[in-house]
Amino acid sequence: MKQPGHDSDALERARIHWDDWQRSQPANQNVYTDWGDHPTVFRAVMRHALGGESENFFTFLQKNYPSCATGHALSLCCGDGAFEQQLLERGVFFQITGLELSPERIAQGRARMSAQNAMRLDFLEKDVNQGEFGKCLFDVIFAKAALHHIQNLEGAFDGMVRSLKPGGLLVTIDFFGPSRFQWTDLQLQACNEFWREHVPPALQREADGTLTPLITRPRVEDMVLMDPSEAARSNELQAMIYKYFDVLEDRALGGALLNLLLYGHRVNRFDAMDPVHNDVLERAVAKERNLMAQGLLSSDFRFIVARAKPWWRRFMR
Ligand SMILES: C[S@@+](CC[C@H](N)C(=O)[O-])C[C@H]1O[C@@H](n2cnc3c(N)ncnc32)[C@H](O)[C@@H]1O
Image (cartoon, rainbow, N blue to C red; front, top):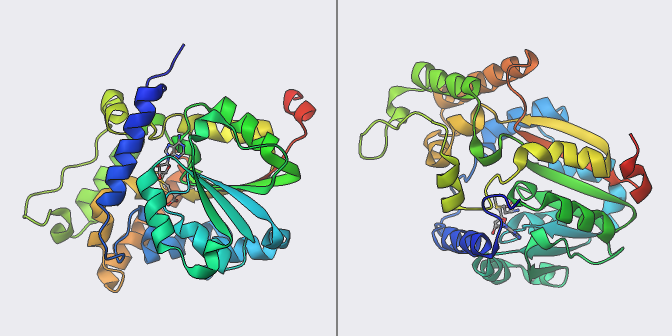
């Protein structure tokens, strides 16, 4: 049976959504898009997930997977390729082919690409759901904020392992939380309680002075209408990775509370130079980690490195 959001009409709506999103981006890049972009939060996440505040995904991959530096990576749902440019500049991968649905995002990416990177980063306009990535071509599949946009997980994962050379890796930094953002009761309660009790009153207001509404669980129909690709089957992703790959690293980045607390434009209200704001964020991180340690919250975001299993091992327990 077809799932909602899985047809050519849905794909077209996702494309339009991301074209519009790209056009709406401010020229001023000093804004955070997501909770993890905030430097205070990012440092805390690195402390918990990678063992040190000075770590980041680039240093971790360089240290632990140095052979990637000469490799060709396929990046799924690469957007404007801004992160891919950094991966090349930092020497994490040698060459990247990016697949992306939105022509507007690709156009922006090409326009912003540095001359050095133009030789080593190419974009293809492609629907990742098709799983048509070629055979034995890539050393790495890279997927940042990407896998949770895939509806046809079976087709895409088949295509991913087919396209990897023997021993090829999957490197993903992604959202593994509730599909279609159907937040748990505890998640909503923890986030909204923290917002009301710990966030300074001035930060609880919109620019026009009205109170920012508390976070609620969106209706699935509204989610599909807005962007049919959003969190399509995110809660199935982790199991899917373990089925197709031998997992080498699975680091819990958190986010079950922080992603909601700092949702949308809220993250930009927290001034990274303000000690009061930073203290609130550190307390939110501590609360999230505490609830995770008790098994009450799971980690909605994860950093996973995994090696493709040979096909016959995917069917063994
Ligand atoms: C959250 S953005 C992440 C972009 C980029 N990887 C990053 O981390 O900045 C998700 C991207 O997935 C793209 N996308 C959604 N569905 C897709 C599909 N079926 N095939 C290819 N790209 C898709 C969107 O256009 C969007 O650029």
